[in-house]
Length: 329
Image 1 (cartoon, rainbow, N blue to C red):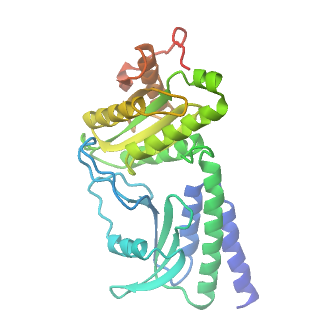
Image 2 (image 1 turned 120 degrees about the vertical axis):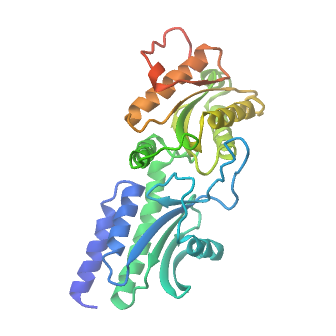
Image 3 (image 1 turned 180 degrees about the horizontal axis):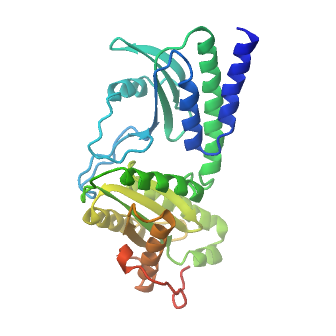
């Protein structure tokens, strides 16, 4: 290995350090790997779970366990590399792996230890010699940066995506629909805001430690109730947000009502609790902040109508909100 080779390797690794988000990091990693002569293609995946959460509450859509990056929400999407991906997931090799599948050489970086979701980079080709050394170095840097960025982009209490990550993911959802000529009315995305009713009184009566326990139990209920193909966030305080994908209004109504009932019937550490929910449809012609404002007004509608209920508001119904008569906490 020459000094020039070593310098190039450091430059490639330094390029990854400039990333400020997981999505930016993955884009840079794909770009760096494609600079290696032996690499012809790189695909990135998130491995979300081992068993689907299929149920009849959301239009009988099959929940997917592997999400490809960049994001695809097409219910009929078929990845031609699915068999290769399934083989890696089945073998579960943490770190680097090289193998041949149906006569084609592949390499993989699979980050599976103590990581949710698991991350997979599937590389067509097998670097050798100097390029293999660079590949190994990039893989180590990438893993450490993924772990570091996860601490930044996830809520430390509930381990859900945080508000910062919401902007990135919602922009991807909007971009997916903007690139489509036709949008199936039975397979759309929806934004719902969920607020734990009278949460301030829980903190006042039982203390903030009990309040934190309620938030953790609430987040766990969300994880169990919604599918892997949906996106869950802690929006702030006692407020959560979910992006429900690949369904129509009837389907999202059922999913949110089912979750509302699950919260009402759950025994929290501080006793009973309920949730108010407001939701709206994702309109790719609107900016992200405008969609969240509509969902927020739908949530206010649920609060003002007695709480412990689900309310829908369309963008056309959206108007000025004056939160002066209803105690939201």
